[in-house]
Length: 492
Image (cartoon, rainbow, N blue to C red):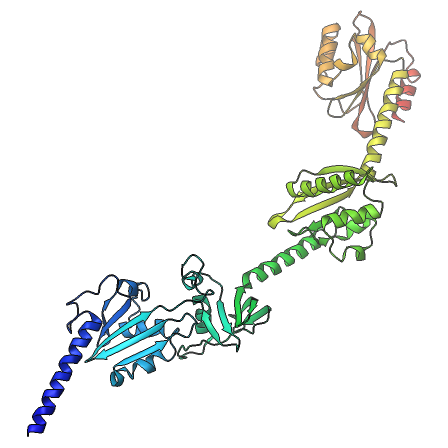
């Protein structure tokens, strides 16, 4: 009986000692909320039957609040299981041991200490001496910054085991894991440490990653950049360029389209026809400078006097193509003339257009020559003649006409303006008023008087091209002799 009493007393004393020790460790009593943790306490969590009753200031940032319906204990395990391997299994043995110390597996040197007494669990996170790869030079926690990065980042030891990973990598592991898979540490190794492009995921949800690896003595630091959208945009741009090339394939204007990297990405068949180039010369996708150098070698680009002038030409063409301000005519050694213009395009690309305007220039020169012939023929005639376009614009007035009506060639602008002069200087106002505002589209002969009262006949005759010739002659002049022969000569 005495022995039983002694053991009871010892048990009671041991319990009292345990209570005192727990109170000293936790800084609080058995009832939740009866004491507050000091502000300078480390990252301390107090659980009562799985309910988080109190956290230190440092612990709040490690376990943010959540409204996902999970218990406090489940949230704690979900957050820290990624850094402390087999955490749930180890903490389940805490009741039988009373104390556990668990080291982090992410290379940070952090340590978790857990104590248990009569349903109460006190867990404290001790920060270890951080590796330089984890802590930034200014003392800030690199892992917190890395968790904000959208691209997966991780570190491996020499054996290929992951020792640290950011939130994006862990989220990718969870996304690719089979349903019901419990997260473990270290996480699944998704990538081989070889730089290159890798596709992960099923076909419908596949993502493309570009892996960058920095080898170190004790492992490697890796980043996987998601390039899915970048590659899709590149494919769309290539398709667009192909569509543009197809659309311009039937044009007679040569088109050279350069991408944002200033390399030739598309050209139409007319480019080779206009420039006289072989298509195989363009298949290596030269830059704008290389393309112009090719034209120079083929004697297509106008030859500058020296290399400095050549460089200035290249810079002017490239800058003009970017800004849409380059427009110049090139006279080639074969007497052809090319009109070259630069046009900026979407996404930083630019286009050079080459148009052979030799036929237009030849036609313009012929028109100017014919116009000079017309004017010379009219000038040689002694009959007052006025050449009118179908719009009523005066194309030419010979000296005999200007002398008859006392006007200068510069005052002869339109049919309507000449009518006003005729009315002012003639007694035949009614005859001139009867004329329409536009040039008559039929042959007409009217008796009129000149400025000095001399009797005249006014003849309006349509000729080819929609033009008209107005002539003035005296009644004594034989019809069909002088006037008709002159009109035929002019019309020829």
